[in-house]
Structure formats: C-alpha cells, structure tokens
Amino acid sequence: MSDAPLTEFEFAGGRLHGTRLALYGNRLVQWGGDAMETVVLGQVASVRVAFERDARKLNWALALMAVALPLFLAAGPLQRWLGALGRGSDAARADALDGFLQAALNAFVALAGVLPGVAGALAVAAAALLAYFWLGTTTFTLAFGATERVFAVRGRNRQLVAFGEAVGEQLAARKG
Image (cartoon, rainbow, N blue to C red):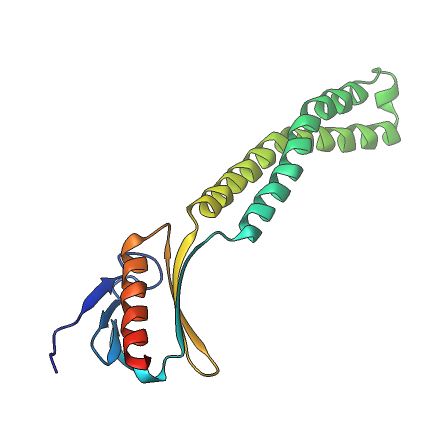
C-alpha cells in the first residue's frame, strides 16, 4: 500500500486555519495544531459536500435594517420637535417645574441627535451580515453511525468540493 496521499486539502483561514486533510486508500487523516486524527474509511457511512448560505444571517440583516431605517427617519423630525418644545418663553423658565421640563427636553434632544449614529451602526452591521450571507460556506461532512464531523470554509471553495468528491469516490470504491 502506498503511503502517498491520493489528495489533500489545507484550510487557509477561519477556525480550522492550518488544518490539513489527507485522503489515503483506506483512511482520512486530519492534522491540525498539536493533534492528528485518523478515520478509517470503513467507519464512514456517507460523505456530503455542499455550498450553503445561512438564512439566519439574512433574517438578522433585514431585522437590523427594519430598526435602522425608522430610527434614521425619525431622528431629524424628533430632534426639531423636541428642540422647539424646549425653547419656551423666558418668563416660564423661572418656574422650577419648567426648568426640570427644559432639562428633560434637552436630554431628549441629545438622545434624538444620537439616533442617526445608532441607525448608521445598525446599517453597517446589517451590511456585514448580508455580506456573510452572500459569501456562504462550503461544508464537507463525514457521517458515521450516530455522529458526523463537519469541516467548513467561508465562500464557495471548489478545492474542498473536489476533495469531498474524491473521498466519496474512494468510499464508494471500498463499499462497492
């Protein structure tokens, strides 16, 4: 039996950065960090490789935009309206209650002034989630009897797909 791998895949980034998978005639070997694991192909029930997009990221992005847009649209009118309320007559400011109302309205004006920044931050977060949704992930899954092992990389990765196909072909040849 040859000791040279049939094919290999190295994770260039992400959580598995530096991890390498190597397919041999009868086993799959994973090297990463300070560990090595060997999986006998006879123990693998199935192999799956897929490009997926996480719909939760899209839902969160839409929810953040749904919050950001009204905040941004309400900030200007709210600031103008509260500012106009705070500019009362000079005679009315002599009263202590009117002074308290003036301070409260000024605080609300300041809060309304912050709303565009909050809306902008929410919009940036939504854009980042949309980007992660659009990029998606390519996942390589080994299924065993009662468990599975998942290896994922960001984006559409043709090399991982090709590696998964090679593992599937080797598995089919062994069981066929």
